[in-house]
Image (cartoon, rainbow, N blue to C red):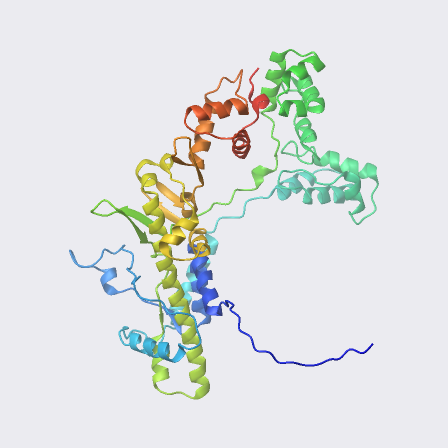
Length: 495
């Protein structure tokens, strides 16, 4: 059998979409939150010699009485100017446009640049030294705290080494995630199981009580002392009926143990004093600093208007010094280098301006749809989807998603993430559109006011919601009840 091989040339047409690198950069800039944008600008300022921070205008530093904007006013942006479009054919023409724009820039640093003097460098070093000297010390970790205590035990070297190994392998709750035989195998040194058990016993004596446990049951038992009220009852309940307690099966515990219901309830109240996560006190929760990108205020006509907050972001410009160097016709290599740096700086500035423009338009469309939220509070939120905003602004829904990601808006009712204003909804029996958030709030209100000795089942909750005009399926009520962390009927019952 012979196979004939041949080559052929064919012509065809097809459509495909390709994103230019600069367009990808613009989308990345749009998605960046405030602090990430600041870091990106600082990085570009350090890497691009043709990009510099625009100095503050004198009229902003010392405004005349009754004239000009206030000192804390945010700079105004020309949002109506058409941003540059990514492409290879607009390099020369747009570069000439930059030369024209540069003629209006002030002449400060025109020839000398913005290099700091030796005195400025020395002062900067002194400030950095003072900052380091006054910086808050790092808080002590759980492992450091336990190792300090463990050092006081007089034990054999093998036991000490394995005990320190156990401490280093505790999780943030202060528990061991592996069994003792498994940890002996991966320890890396020869140690008997009896020595490992002795090391674990010593670790479990350390403060805070409960560290070194291998599960919740052991963690709670380690915290029971001879002085603990209802000690024997607690030990029995934790050892044999912890799952029954979690499922609120108190009558079952009463039948199995012979303890009275009152005694069981008193022991469970004492159990609440125990800490199931003894190690978490050493893991400080990170403090999240929120800087809003937008502010919404009412104008004179009573309409809610969105404004960009950009006083935290430095204003950028292309260095007049290097533009002047290009006018002097330097050698080809220098000219090519400077043109590339200028092009990169220009695209960053254009991307930031386009970010402001898109973000303001998207936020204004959201605010126009959620005026009742601003007027009357979260209870008045309206069902809203990103596709609706995309249709209003005239962009793709993914652009709206990037614009609202990690962005916050300052309102008279507090600072909210932009995603907070998007809410799914449903149509009630009366034809009214209601946001899911309002349905969940009403569901919680009904459960909070139920008779805890005879709580409502999910079928009963469906009927109660229908009384308020919310026709929902049972599975929908169950789904939202679980999503809100509300226990089942049996778990909510109070005996």
